[in-house]
Amino acid sequence: METVKHFENKILKTERYTRIIFLAAMAALTVVATAQQEEVKVVKPYTPTLSGADKIQLLPRIGDSISHEHPEFEYRIFSKRYETGYRVTPIKPARMVQPTLNKLYKSELTLGGGNYLTPLAELRINQVRSSKGTAGLFLKHHSMNGSVRLANDQKVDAGFNENSMEFYGKRFLRRSIFEYNAGASYDIYQHYGVDTTYADSVTRDGMSHPFFNGHAEIAFQSARPDSFHFQYKGSLQYDFFTHDFDQMEHGAVLDATISDLVRDFRVGGDLGVSYFGHPTTWDTLLTNHFIIKLNPFVSKSSSEWDLKVGLNTYTEVRNGNVIPHFYPRAKFSFNIVENILVPYMGVDGHMESNNYMKITRENPYVVPGLVVTPTNYRIIAFAGFKGKITDYLTWDLKASYANIDNQYFFATDTSNYLNNQFLVAYDSLTMMNVSAELNISPTGSFRTFIKGNYYYYQMDNLLGAWYKPVFDVSLLARYNVADKIIADAGLYVIGPRSYPQTALTANPVASLKTTVDLNLGVEYRYNTLLSFWARFNNITAQPYYMWHNYPSYRFRFMLGFTYAL
Image (cartoon, rainbow, N blue to C red; front, side, top):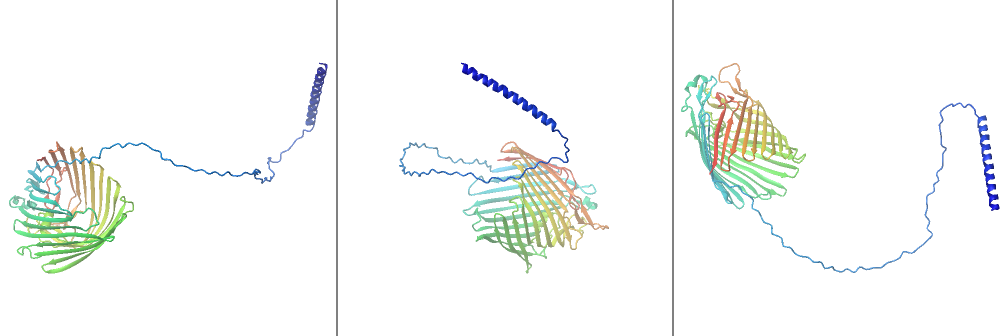
């Protein structure tokens, strides 16, 4: 015990001496620090620097002093078949569901009437659905019997009477399709556009001009769906046309197109002969007139471009005189952006026959027995862009240039004091045209079509391109509401048209004003058999003129129904 106490006393003494020494050292350091305080002046800011250092370029290295041997293994896999159980479950065979076909009715009757004493009657009789072919009969009567106001506000009898009948059909053969049609029409037009001085002389019987046409046509075409086989299409048409059974015209037109694939090229041609004969009792200018065409071509296409080149040859035989004509033919189109932006360009030319039936249908107020010589389209050059922005919006923008010889223009026959009939004047011209088309179909029930044209004529001799518009615009729209209500709208705008003055004035050229014609139609389908309809024409009630001295009817309407039998 004494030994332990003696040891503890030594430890306490040691701690006491240690504390005294530590306090004495601290006091000495304080005195030294106080004695060494001096004033220091800073000349510039302190900039610390580091001295360069050499890096130790030592990389770790593992040294393994233990060596060992890799073991070797040998093994084998013995395959064994594992028996699995299975069961065949029978399934029902697929059933071919026949598509639903709309029921066809053998006949359809349309009756209607409107102001200006306007009856309308149509009857269609058709063969029902058949795999062998189709056949049908169509009868129509449409007339207007009201009066119109001339420029002096005096009423005169106007109108027309149109009657037609046509029998048509189609037969499906093994590798071709045979078509046929035959019919007749009897139309009467009132030449009511007299000089206002003689308006009192206009009577319905005295101004009536009847036209009769009987026609027949047969046609063949290939029924092969692909283009790897020989393709053909041809027709033969005959027309008998007469004015009041006095001036008679016999016309026959043979037209055909053939082509075949030769290696990677499609080689073919357009062939045709047109004949129009007039008795010498009223025609000593043309009498028997032929135009023979032979237009060979070669074409090649791919998914990105399409090229067609050829030569158009037309041989005119006029009263025994043979006159050949040659025209270049080419067209090229390619895809810049597939189906969205497709530029195209080409050149063409042809000879056009101006037979009596064609002229009277363009202007029924011509002098009876008018003979018009053919028109020579020496060259037609064109270029444009077409495409689609979406699947519902397509467009086409085109510009063309044409050099034309022997073009006819209607002019009032001043040898007749009534001034109600037209002759033709000929001239050569250069015509430029810019056209634009837009087709919008956002849904299956609504679609709109807009087209506009601008024309420029440079005449050689005449003072103007008589009755040719400066511009024209057409807008068509249709809206189908659940196949129950169908609404149609049409807007037609025809720009100013010049014509030669009939009176002696300082200005020999006059002009017809811009024509605006707005039309609406609506049909209500009560059921699959019966529907009711209404049509409204010239809603703006404009007394516009299509020809000099020929004002049109103003606001017109017609109501009717259609019934399937």
